[in-house]
Image: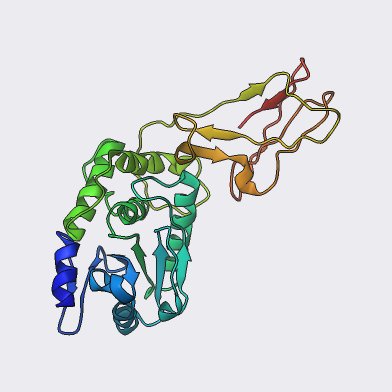
Length: 286
């Protein structure tokens, strides 16, 4: 009875079915798995039972799997040997670009260190947020470089369509599809320090050359901690492209006579840009 209920609620999503298992779980590639939320108690009547998921992954991959929890919910990770990384964001939204790069860095490293390693990603239904991460990973891993695509949009569409075909359902929110494109375009800037296998010729990127702030208030002689935040369009947490606070240290603020500031815009290979302003302003060059 419970299997019939789960099958009904999974809708069009392709399930993993054999003599022992019937799970909302799909092998997108031999190393990348998309699945529904692993649950317990009453919720397991219509979602994957966490014990069954753990049993399948242990049987097929031993200790060579790593799970990415993209939902905003946490659960007991001990059935998976605590090999779970929490990196979720709100449903029906896109993640900050920096978060996606952090997720991809984990995936790329995990797959690279051992040929037996696989990753599994889930949100709730294993469609939107899961699709974003897997599509971005497929693109960065060079899954579509042999296509005769000429534009970034064509590469993105190939990844989205491939995921939908394999999973039976996929990324449908236009904002999320746009995010995949923005992520791909950012591979020569934010993601330049990652080992990327995507070598297709992309459309030109737009660079922010400089930002000049005049008459920055300094209070009554107290120390001022400045930060730089760049938004894609409007001022929203979901549109943040760069935030200097991600480096966990405030921007170095110098006195008005020195009038310069240094912004580290790379995760490992720091780029330093300095400028001097004749009007004793703070100049940011990134």
